Image 1 (cartoon, rainbow, N blue to C red):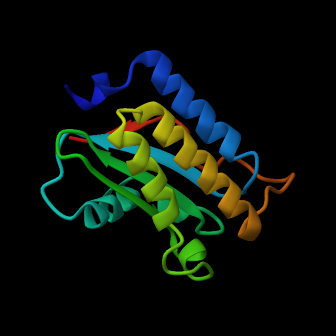
Image 2: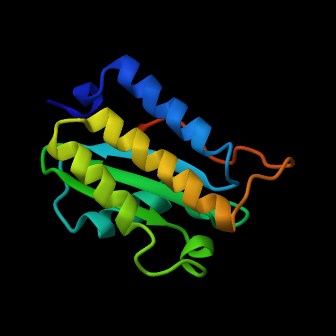
Length: 145
C-alpha cells in the first residue's frame, strides 16, 4: 500500500483536525510526513524532511514533525531547536511510544491523533498559544518520494 492510500481521505481529515486542535493549545507548529520507505535512520531522515519543508523557519523555532515510513514501519518524532533547547532529552519518547502502542494494534489513525494531541498538550507548557499566533506552516499531510 502506498503512502497516499495508507490513510483514507476521511482518516487524513481526522489527522489534520488533530493537528489543528493541538495547535489551539500551543504556538508550536505540527506536521505529519509520510513516505513509502526510509533507507536510513528515521530520525536522520526526519531531520532532512524537516529542513526540506522549511519547518526550521518558524519564528520561535518550535516546529514538530511526525515522520512515518509506511512499508518499513519506521517512525520519528522530532522538534526544532527552540523546543529541544528547553525540554528534557526524552521529551519525544512518550509520544512516540504511545503511537507505537496503538500501531501494534493496527490503530494507525488513532495512534497518530493521540500522539499529535499529546504533543500539543506537552508543548503548551513551554509554548502556550498566543492570541497573536499565526499558523506558520501548513497542517496538511506531506508525502515524500
